[in-house]
Image (tube, rainbow, N blue to C red; front, side):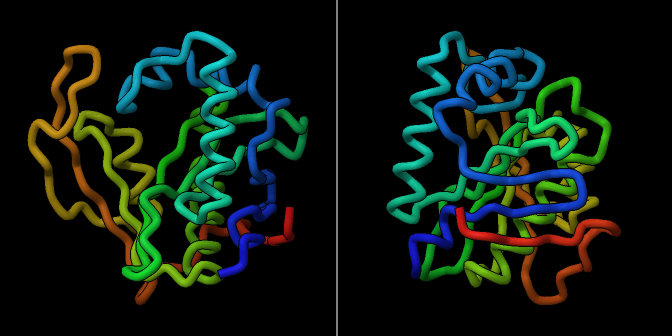
Length: 196
């Protein structure tokens, strides 16, 4: 599979999804140092710019080795970084991956997650040839559960006491969406893809 497929630029009505670069590190730290944004992640909130740079470098390395696809979510209106959207745990033979996303708190409630995630999902099904996309969330994370349900994911089960972060033990709800019988994209969610 071509390396270019793991470094796309995906354009939607309001957003531009593209690989993160070092210049994004400060804005990414602002997003991922917010305890409310990171409340349901399996890592503690970030504390330094080095955390952001490490994430960006590790993401690029994973993309070069075709293990993951990590894109910054940029607002077309301002060019600012609104969050990140990713496919991890990519398994070529089984044609599956796990989706995840994080959005800056001022961008919540505006439909950006649905728009970015649907664009990434369509790219995964059409360009990467995935058959299945999974999502693993804390069952208490109702906003992510609602977002996944709107995106056509089905709750498939709960993994009990799956994570322990900062001494807090939590379950994981496992969601899945298949390429076959996939619901159409959200209105106004036309996607244009170009190589980075």
